[in-house]
Image (cartoon, rainbow, N blue to C red; front, side, top):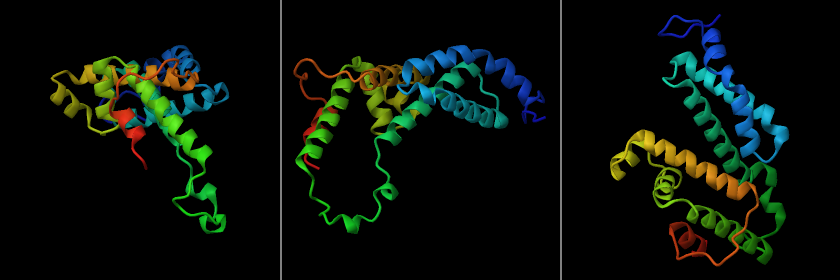
Length: 196
């Protein structure tokens, strides 16, 4: 049986007591935030693996928070991966007989529409939440740096990121579309207007 390196408690005992007790809440969270419910069991297992591996090095101070932060990060990773086309899946690009800069109008419009939809979802976030979310997810700043820049606690940064992720995931996964013309330009909308 594996033991936590700094506490002497069996890791399996800790995991059962501190993590598995939240399984029902975790499953509700996953069903609420992930469109493909057939993948929820696999997502749960991957979350458990990540939490278990992290706990084998050091038990988190707040196991429930750590569990749900891990879940949110995994969902964000999956969303990012779904939006990236694998180069190997494309096969031999040379055999496609197209120029790299050549882009079909339908695809160009579709990509532009997706980016506008993302900008719309980002615009819907509360101001401070949007600012924190932008600094973390776009500018890739660490939580401590965001907290320092904005004069807020790291815990508040984490809450804003979680809230932003939840709200944007709801907007993007529920296939909601903007019903009215977008508000004045934000950074994301400006990016959408720039030619690639």
